[in-house]
Amino acid sequence: MSSKNQPNPVNAYTYIDRSTLRCPNCYLPLIPAQSIRGSDCSNWMRCSDYSCKTFYLAAVPLPHQHHILTDSSHYLNVLGAYGSGKTYTTYMADLKHSLITPNGETLIGADTLVQLENTIRKDLERDLPEEFVKQYNRQKNMITLINLHIIYWRHLAEIGDIRSYNLSRAHVVEASEVKYEAYVQLQSRIRNDAAIVYYTDANGKPLVEYDPDTQSMRKKEKLNWIQLVTESNPDANWIKDEALLKSGKIHLHYETDEEYRVPPADAVPFMTSHIIPTKANTYLPQNFYENMARGKPEWWIRRFLKGSFRYSEGLVYPNWQTNIVPDFQIPPEWPRLIGFDYGLSDNSHFVFGALDLKGEVYGRAAIFWYSELVLSNMSISQIAKKYREHVRRVVPPNSVYTLPRMDPISYATRTRVSDKKTIGTLLKEEGCYFLPGEVNLDYRILHLNDLIDSARSYFFEEGFKHTNKEALEYKFPPKSLEKRTKKDDKPVDIRNHGVNAVEFITSKVSRNLKVPDSKVHQYTPTDRPAITTRLKDQWNPLAESSTTTEDNREGPASLFPVGGNF
Image (cartoon, rainbow, N blue to C red; front, side):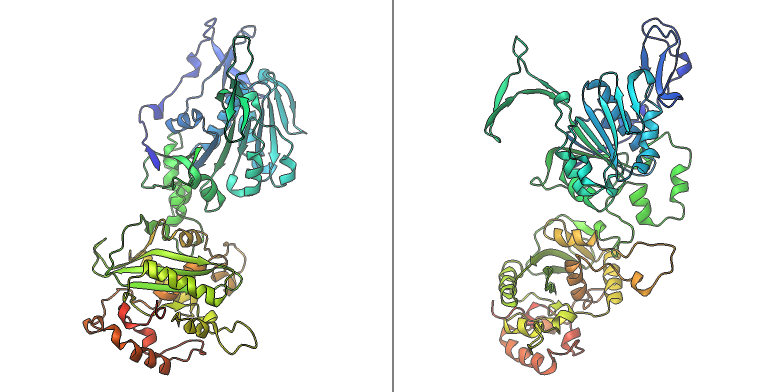
């Protein structure tokens, strides 16, 4: 679960008049310390008597920065919007670790060295007193402090270049631009015991204890401040899946309506995430937020100014995430919808929705997508068997609103060149009845977006998590100033089978989710053979599409012979 930390208006505006500061030892005035770049340090002061050797850190962290600086989690994710102060916070944490960890090693990396040079490297080196440094080798991109702690500046584009380090701390800057493999490699590199204090006996010998995981004896740890830090803007890539949504604790700073739920089985107890919006930084210039937000689309504001992971640039369904709801027990009388996207070399994906026609949940008619079935590397008969088994579990008898729809191209495709039967026909022979879904992709996207935006389509958080994940990665090609082609207006066709299955069936449901004629609801199962015959007469299974009356009819479960005899 995520926790929300509201701003403290007193601490948020703490100010220190540095001209009045005095040395705590000799009470002489403090002056700015000189950095290794030759300028005054941003935050470090020193006694004006150079023989005193007293240094004073005059930085005043904001409440969210203080929270991060005192967070000892083994894996720490600092995820912030533009101007949220995340870079300042993390470089101060890097300095803190370096100064309290003699003989340790800190690696600060990004996808390219340029990304470091223009951000954190410049800030840290302008705030590192030259008296703290033993050697500064700019050519080798490393700093050795007088306590023999080494700070490395490294690019992370080549995984092999980071395999030989023995680190007490690693910090990944602009982590959304870094490959996940680099992050995994750094996880194996943070093992330097310079950041560990062990229990000892009276003679100073480390105490040992039995480790049931390795089934061996190991030194007993008293303190451990080894840490891997990721710093990033919100994104829908591995930062969300492997960092945010694996966190044992998630802290949401400042006012926010966001909330993120991590299943207990996925939560890593020693991983913590902090999400910081722009407004949490009260030191920004006046009207900074308003000027940045002016003229920007809502998804951009939510992602880059509010720090939301629910929005991403170019999403086909930008408000899908907003309509993800906690699972609940679906009333058995609610009519059901079934969609299917067949995958030859990819996944075959079935989706199951329920219609709240009376508006029992939100006061308006809506579809709730509550279950899915994802299959791979199976024959048609195996797929049909799994589908029938799943329908028995999640679809009440006689409850299907309209005949299930599937991918129209796959429906009319033959499994082999020499085979005269299409996939649609083969499924029908297995007792699984489908009609081809809407061919027009533009219409499907427009119609489903309309249902989502009008609060008439919701998605279960757990029961529909595979399709939810697809929807958050289903995008149009990145925008550019180059001349656009028709191809640029189509979504990237990758990992979208569940989303497409939803499109195929919802395109045959009216926007207002109108309740069918009451006479249709009185239909009895004994009439099913007649309906089956009529469908067979009017519907050509070899055709690419169908425009029969049944193809466009809306009705309840009992009308169609779904899945044959289950």
